[in-house]
Amino acid sequence: MQINPAMLSDARILAAYVIFFASYFVFALGKFPGLKIDRPGAAIIGAVIMVAFRIMSAQEALRAIDFSTIVLLFSMMLIVANLHFGAFFDWIAEITVLRLNAHQLLATVVFTSGILSAFLVNDIVCLVMTPFIIKVTRRLALKPIPYLLALATASNIGSVATITGNPQNMLIGSVSQIPYVSFLAHLGPVAVVGLFVDWALVHWMYLRHVDPGTKLQISNSLEVEHHRPKMKPVVVLAIVLVGFLAGAPPAIMAAVGAAALLITRTTEPRRVYDEVDWGLLVFFTGLFIIVGGAERAGLTANLLRPFVAWNLHRIWIYSSLTALLSNVVSNVPAVVLLKSLVPGFPDPHTGWLTLAMSSTLAGNLTITGSVANIIVAERASPDVHIGFREYFRLGLPLTLVTLAWGIIWLSWVH
Image 1 (cartoon, helix red, strand yellow):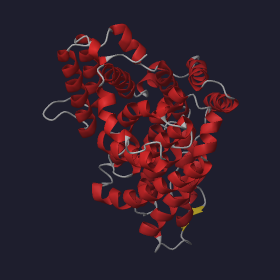
Image 2: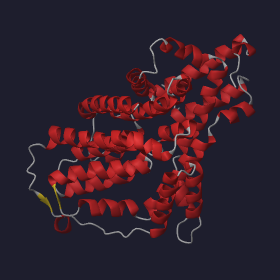
Image 3: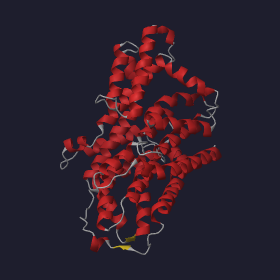
Image 4: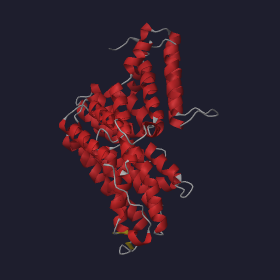
């Protein structure tokens, strides 16, 4: 229900403006200057102040939270954590690099990370794949930067394909009620072509002078600790994915899978909980309340009103605005803010897909454009330093080309 801002006093409306812009200022910078306040901290502080200043009641704050998104994100984190402890990712990494040459290694990194990120949270894929790539490239005397850049960018591109690929897609899937299969059918081709573009760009920029006949004799030159994955997490994942494709509500299906994996005699639950990104869950919860309070104060309507004259229902205009805002304040805050525009479009279905596509692909522009990029950079240091300029050399053309392809594709299927 739309709330009339006139029901709030001028002081509360002013407070809502201050809270909103201060919070988004921190979201843009990553932390508050001079203080140890990060994005999750700013989100929860802003949410608490929204309720404390009675811009919205505690009950309204709870209603503002999209619990389907929170449940889906939390459940997928638990499933991925069990896969991690079950050596699933180690097993995948090992079988995908055996008996390859230098040219094939890049393609394997791109498509393995892209496919895994399409169905699992891309941040976790980067978390577990980065150390393995560094180990392989170090033992084989290869420069690790091309393969690390391929991992980061491919995980972003691959995650665009499905609702479970990344947090912002989970939110869009929950709000839009687009079926999992429909989401995959529309954005899967964007991801597939994008992965080929990523592979071609990285190869052309870094590896076109490498002898493709150089064999990577992993079994002889690299000591690999062979792993056999536990079958229970793999079976549960398969059942959950089948449920997604069959049309079951993603949040419920993922929750059932996570609950099944918590029934165990071998894995200590505390280890699984330690793998959950609690900061991201807190960030989402606080962000929902902040934007809910801003909507109640009429702020978001006033803020977005100048853009209405831009014919935002046009795919390329809405995609450009989303990509720009995603790189200013990060993609999740951008999606939470811009999602209120989509129901007013002539074709909301295409609007939701455009929002998912552009907010995700925009994350490849800079090294701080997505959490996956930051994870790769942090996990690789101090062994490998990936600078802003180094990443931007690849990120700029890759983002422009993949966004252009996504716009063309959605315009055609539309």
